[in-house]
Amino acid sequence: MSDYYEILGVDKNATKDEIKSAFRKMARKWHPDVNKAPEAEAKFKELGQAYETLIDDEKRATYDRYGEDGLKNAGFSTQGPFAGGFGDLDEVFNSFFGGGFGFGGGSRRQDPNAPQRGDDLRLDIELDFEDAVFGLTREIKIDHLETCHACSGTGAKAGSKPQTCKTCGGQGRIQQTTKTILGHFTQIVTCPHCHGKGTVISDPCPDCHGQGRKTVEKKVELKIPAGVDNGSKMRLSHEGDAGINGGIAGDLYIVIHVNLSPYYQRDGIDVYTKLEISPAQAVLGDVITIKTLDGEKSVSIPAGIQNGETVKIKGAGVPNISKPSMRGDHIVVVSIKTPTHISNEEKVLYQKLYQIQRERENKASFKDKVKGVFK
Image (cartoon, rainbow, N blue to C red):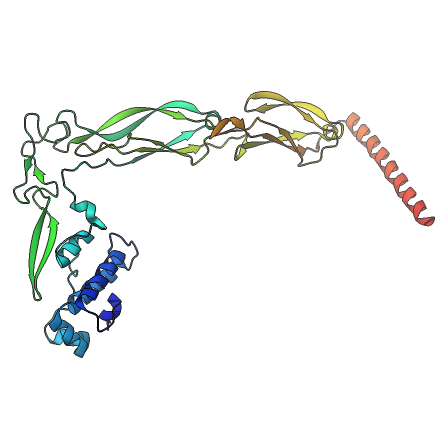
C-alpha cells in the first residue's frame, strides 16, 4: 500500500502548511511537463492522491487509522485529482492554491495576444570536399511561414479585425468546475471556443485562411566560410518561421554534410594523401609533382625513405575556420611499390644489385666474426 507521508516527504505530524509546501516542491519535480522520465506521470498522480488525502482533516484521520483500504471502505475515492489527466503546472497550482507560481507551464498562461517568437528551422546541405575547404556562396531555397501581407498577420479579412472571444472574455482560458464524490474540483482549461487565442475571426483572410501566416518559398544567400567540416552548423538569425502577433522570426540552422574525397583524407585542418614510389626512388630520392589543394606542386622525396614515412608540405592544408589565414599541412604518406612484372634487362640489373648486397652482407659478417676472435 502507498505511504502518503513518504510520497510527499513529510512526517506524520506535518502541518497543513508543511504538506502544501511539500506538494509544491514535489510537483515541480515530477510534473510531466518538467520531468520527461517514464515514471513521472505515475509519480505525479501519486502526489495528487497523497495531497488530496492529507490536506483534508476527515480523510487524513481515516487514513491514519485504517490506511488506504479504510478510505475506500468509508466511501472516499483513492483515484486522486489527476486520474483523468492534468493541466500545466501553473494550472495545477492555481486549482489547488488559488494562484499560479510562474513555473513550468507559465507560458501557457500568458496573454494570448502577446507577441510570440517564430519556430526555428533546419536545413541540411551537401558540399564537395574542395568547396568545404575554401568556402563558397550558395543560394538556397527554404519553405517557411511568413506573416500574411494581405491581413498584416491578424488572420482577418482586410477591412475587418478579430473579435474578443465572448466565452473567455479574451483570456484564452476558462474556469471549469467538475463535481466529484469528493466535492467540486476546479481547473483552468483552454477556452474551447477560441482555442486559447482569446479572439475569434468571423471573416477570415482568404490568403492565409485566418492563420495570419502562410507558407512561402524564400531564397537566401548563404555564405559558407572556408574550413567548414562535416557536421558543421551555421545559424542565420531571423530566417526561420515568422512570429505570431508581431513576435520576432525564428532562426534557420544550416547543417553541413561534406562529401568524402577519393584523394584527400582530412584530419582537423591537415590533409593526407598517399604516394606510391618505386624502390629505386626510395633508395635514390626523387622530386615528384603531386596534386594539392592549391594545384600541382613538386615534393622532394629524400633518399633512403622508408615505407610508411611521410613528407610534409607546410601551409597547404585546410584553412582554420576561425582564422582563415592560418592553414594546416598537406602530409604525403609514402608507399614503396614492389614491381610484379619486370623486363629481362631489369631482371639482370636486380640480380646484379642483389649480388652486390649479398657480398656486402658477407663482408660485414666476416668482420664481425674476426672481431669476435680477437676479443
